[in-house]
Image (cartoon, rainbow, N blue to C red; front, top):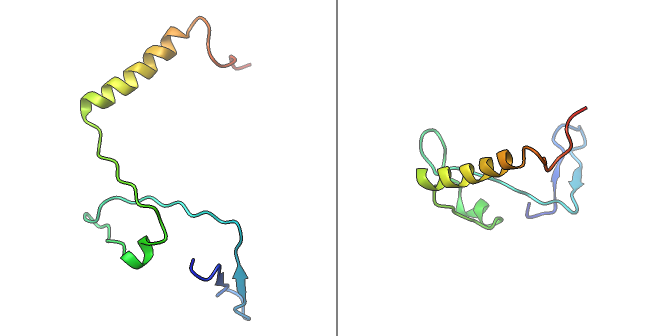
Length: 83
């Protein structure tokens, strides 16, 4: 990631493959239960965002609102019916 590419170790020449216009996206859980911690040297390449887990009441409110909207749209669906 630091050097704008990687060496192709599967080719006999081991030539350098330059990467352009690449975005890296990663996700991880907290260390423990078989998950290892990630070094600060690697994490420095990313913006770290933490989201507190939702409570059961919050999840119920979010998904019941979505389902109420879907059932209310039964007579006038927001998407075409399948053929």
